[in-house]
Image (cartoon, rainbow, N blue to C red; front, side, top):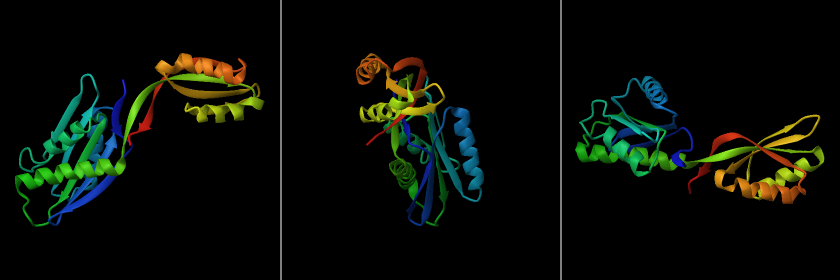
Length: 210
């Protein structure tokens, strides 16, 4: 099934009443990777008063964790996690580092600041939909390869790799599961039946969310 996550690692900073809120977000594969990212970020910002965290990993079952790191209970990690939930994300970790500016924000102010820091970071980094696709190896000759690659891309297919050898050329193409039969028909028509397609596995591709 497709799922949403961040496009990649990134950082964004906001300032609220002289306090700095630095949000790091990243894509992670599991809880261990999320905890490793959190540990590395806390080590980097060891001198900050707070390094609050939230992450969501997996899908079935989905694992969620948050930590207020000495901020008043429910004012940091929970609103951070709520932003990830509201965006429908998984395999995503967020760490918000706070450098205190001398002005108390109150519970409501902290909730808005921590949640706002994560939301702003997600807007800055961008989101992608991870879609499952079938991998097919398309074998053709050297003369046809360049034109076929262009035609594949123009038709909207994902060309993941092109390998030239003495015998011919192999193009690795990602095709949505429901479109494999249609792709094979398209390939036969485009090449006069001369190019061969062999299924080699499955993977996921990133499709930007606009």
